[in-house]
Amino acid sequence: MSDMQLLLFGAELRTRAREILVRAENTDDQEAQEAMRVIAASYQKLALRMEQRVQDAYKGAVAARSLRAAARAAANQARYRPDAVSRA
Image (cartoon, rainbow, N blue to C red):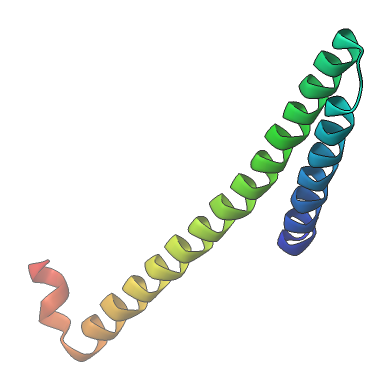
């Protein structure tokens, strides 16, 4: 799944969780209410995992970009100042 699909799926799970909680409030059966609350909490937990996965991927991409930029800068410095590499 792409990052956008994961975020959309997370939003859909949160919507489902809210709908289940509304249904739980409108039932008199305590056992059913508890089961619905557990299911809603599971949907919310899964949505959080989807969002965290996208966030971690984004952080990894930013870190990789920073490392590539640092490597390019070091290579450019070495190209223009060969003595700079031996001092480092």
